[in-house]
Image 1 (cartoon, helix red, strand yellow):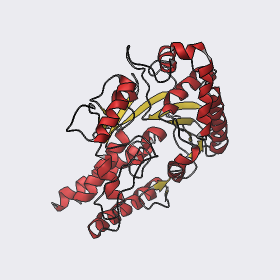
Image 2 (tube, rainbow, N blue to C red; image 1 turned 180 degrees about the vertical axis):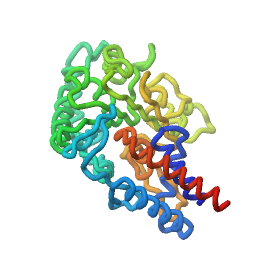
Image 3 (cartoon, rainbow, N blue to C red; image 1 turned 60 degrees about the vertical axis):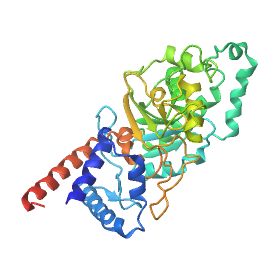
Image 4 (cartoon, rainbow, N blue to C red; image 1 turned 45 degrees about the vertical axis):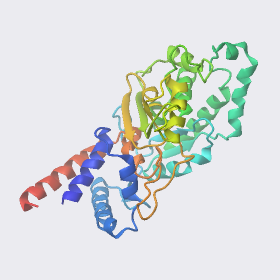
Amino acid sequence: LFHRLYTLVRQRCSVLGSALPSARDMHSKQTAGRSAVAQGPRLRTEQLTRTRCRRAGRTQGSNPQRCVTKVGAAETGNGAALTKRQQRGVVILPGLGNNSGDYDAISADLRDRGLAVATAQVSRLDWLRNAAGLTTMDYWRGTLKPLPTVNWYMEKIAAAIDKAKEESGGGPITLLAHSAGGWLSRVFLLERGLGPVDRLVTLGSPHNPPPAGVADQTRGILNHVAATTPGNFHEQVAYVTIAGKYVKGALLTDSSAAFAAKAAGAGYAQVCGKTEVWGDGITPVECAHLKGAKQITLEGVYHSPLGALQPSPDGLNMGRPWYGSPGVVDLWVAEVTRDASELAEYEKELGDVAAETSMTGK
């Protein structure tokens, strides 16, 4: 009963986005299935999931610890009911240097939860198109504007939204943007309009421009974005910014610091002008959050799917989970779906377990 109570509290925290447990711990526990010690709790979690699915009229997915939403009545970001032919659509926006294939696992995870998912079709070579900005004087002055330099990415977003609209039956769209995809999505909403988009969830995105005296790695674009679409700019869109607290940066002269901390610190300094701050290894926490947005910071979460490591089966190596790793997704996915019925379900089940504990005295 204690384990069941703890499991439900943890799941409730993932929906509320508060008092979140360490992602490393959660990731390690979820993948330690071969451990004899972990077998009992894991099976009990699967049984609880089966109960939740039955109560909500949902089915268990390929992952026995997850429910799959049947296409039917659901909620949009503002609480309006969807029709039986509609689903919520999710558009995944890749970060700088990433390609669409890097997000196949998280796309499958979200589909397994009953969402209509489309990923902007970006290749690694596509990012070389940004070099077009080199031909303008604005680049060298540090006053570069997003357009026309990133027009190519705007087209990728538009195509992915069209695909998600078709697959969702015209349902509302959440933009799920990783890294540079976060500020690129803000450019899109400003330049192309909101359309069916009612939610923007960003993962480790460097939203804020560096302070004066620090070279802007985007050569002025971030300053332009901050000036033209500051904070939670669009009232009709729910903004959620998610940051990872994976490694604290260190000065290069710190002889006691690990190389990873020194490397991270050097990168953080280029983004926010500070070295000894926490971040996900690439983006400092303070730069990943937008003013006015719902802000969630996850412990032990790395920046990118490139370099993310799975825990060892024996549980001795906890790995390096990123925002899209199994278990970590559970900590923020409610912000994508805004599934109020799921939250109510957890609340009821938590009360049931607490009552059962009180009656049995266990």
